[in-house]
Amino acid sequence: MESKEREGGLPPKETNHLISETGRDLTIYGELMDAALKAKAASIMPYFGEVSDKSIIIDVGSGTGQLAEYISRELHSSNVYAVDFSHDMLALAAANLSKINLVHDDATKLDKIPNESADIIYHGTVGHEIQTFRGISGLDDSLHSSFRSLKPGGREIWRDFVKPPEGDVYLEILTNDGFDTVDKATQNGFLNYSLLSTKALFDCFHCQFKGGNAFNYEDVTQDGHNLIKLPAKYAQEFILRKDYTANWRQEIEEEYTYWTQDEAKSAFEKSGFTNIQIIDDDNEYIRNHRLTGKVALYTYDGSGLKPIEFSTHMVIVGQKEPSATTKTEEREIEPINFTSLLDSIKVKNESIKIDQQEFPKGELLGRGQHKEVYLVDDGENNKVIKIVRKDMTTFYSAFSSLQQSVERQHILDNFGIKYMKIYDYDKNGPPYRFLVQEKIPKGSLCASELIVNGELKEENIAQMAQIVNAFENSKQWQIDTNPFNWYRVNKNGKTEMVYIGGTVYRYNENWSFDKVGLLQWVDPRYVETSQNQSAKIPNQAEFQDFARRWQKLDTKYANWWKKYLNPNVQPK
Image (cartoon, rainbow, N blue to C red; front, side):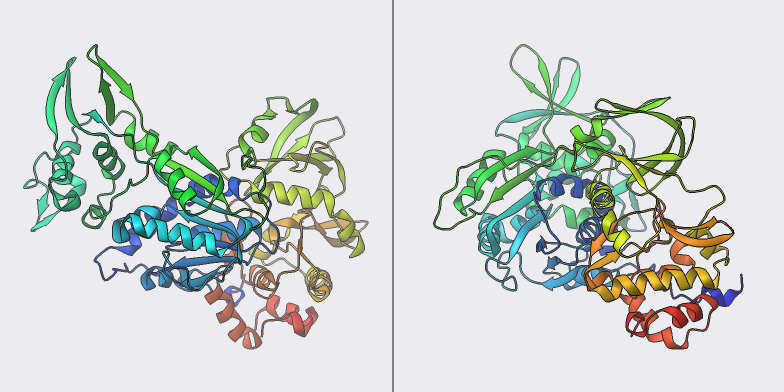
C-alpha cells in the first residue's frame, strides 16, 4: 500500500503526565480509574431501567469521562453529560471526547442541570471525595441537587465504598514483601511507598490518615496469629487503599468510607427518594488481587477468632416519585438480571443449549466486542448462531444489537440493503440471547481486511456511499457502518456489499457518517487498532481535524468517497 493511503489523521499519543494544583498525578489517577470502568458500568447500568434514545443521563464527578463515554457508546446515545468541578479532569476528558457532553459544575449544587430534566443521575465512586472535601453536609447537598434535577420517576444511582458496622476487628497481614522501614524505601531523598511492606504501610497510614493518630490500635497475638486490633472503619480504610501507593500522598487525605448501608438509606430518604434499594457490590478484582491471601479480618467472641469479610462497595438506588401529587405503590427497582440471562446459555463441546432449544455447535467463527459467532453444524453448514458473550461485564450493546437485528429487518428491506437472513431467534426475548442467521458465503472478504490491504474497489465504495446517502438523508434511521460488519460477497460473478451486523439505530447527528464511519473507511489505522472486531471510534478532536483536511485529502479511498458520497453527508 502506498504511504499516502495512511493520511487519515490519528494524532500522536501524548505521554506527559498531568499534575493538578493539589499535586495529584492525574495521569496515574486516570489510568487507575479507567481500568475499573467496566466494573463500574456493570454495577451501575443494570439499575437504569428502561432507557430510550432521548433519555438524559448525568455522570456526576465524571473525572476523565471514560465511564460516561463507555455508557454513551453502550447506549448509542449522545445525551450523556459528564459533570466535574475539576478543570484538570475536564481537560483529560476533552482530550478523548467523542459522544459525551462536558459540564463544569459543582456536585453539591448542579446549578447547570435544569430542574426535572434528567432521567438518570449516577455518582460512580465519587461520594467519598465529596465527603472528604465537603463533609456529610456535602453529601446531603448532592442528593438534594440530584432530586431536584431528576424528572418525576427518574433514578439516582450511587456507587461507592461501604463503611462497616461499629466495633473492633482484628487485622492480620499475611505478606511480608517489601522494606519494613521508611529509611530503606527512601531513594534520593524521596520515599517510594511502593517499596514498603504492608506492615510498614500500615504504620504510615496510622501516622498520616486524617492528620495522624486518628484511631488507637493494639498489636496482639491470638490463636497463634499476629494481629492488629483496631476499629472496623479504620481497618476497612487501610485495606482499601494499601495498594494505591502511586498517589499515596493524596489518597491518604481522602476518607473512603462514610455511610453504612443503613446510613445510606437514611440519607436518600432525607432527600425525598423512595423505593430505595441497597445492593452489596463487592469488587471481585480487589477481593481476588488485593485482599485474599494478603490480609484477613476476624472478630473474637471469647471462644476463638471468627473470619469475616466486609463488602468493598455498595450501590444505592433511589427513585423520585413519578408524580409529585400522586403517591405510587412502593416496589423494588428490579435490574435486568444479566447473570441469569447469561447462565441460561449453555455452550458445550458439541452443542449450544438455551432453555429447551439446542443447536449442534460447529467451530467458533468470530468473537466480537459483545457477541460470539459459531457455525451451526447441522450437516448443511450454511447457518451461524450469534450469542451474547458470557465473559463480558456489561451487555447493553449486545442485547440491544440482537434485538434491533430481529425487530428492524423490515427497515433494511425498505432501504434495499443486502443482509444475512435470520432463520430463528430467542422467542423468549427481548432481551434476545441468540439468533440464527445465514452464513457468509465462502470466499467473501471483510471490508476491514480490504481496507487494511488496500484492496477496496471503487464499485465497493460506490455501493456503500449509496447506502450511507439513503440512511443519512432519511434523518430517521442510521446503519452501523463499522467495516467489520460489512463483507464483499461474490454472487454470479458480481460483487456486492452485504451487511452482517443487522443493527439499525434511530438517527443521531452526533453519530453521523462523517463523524464516525468515514474515517474508519478512509484511514486504515482505525481498523488496525481495533479490538474485538470493532473499528476505533474517532474522538471529537480527530474528526474535527479530519473535517479541516477533507477537501485537500488526496488518497484513493478519500477521492472515491468524495465522488459518490452526497456533499451534504461529507465533512464540513
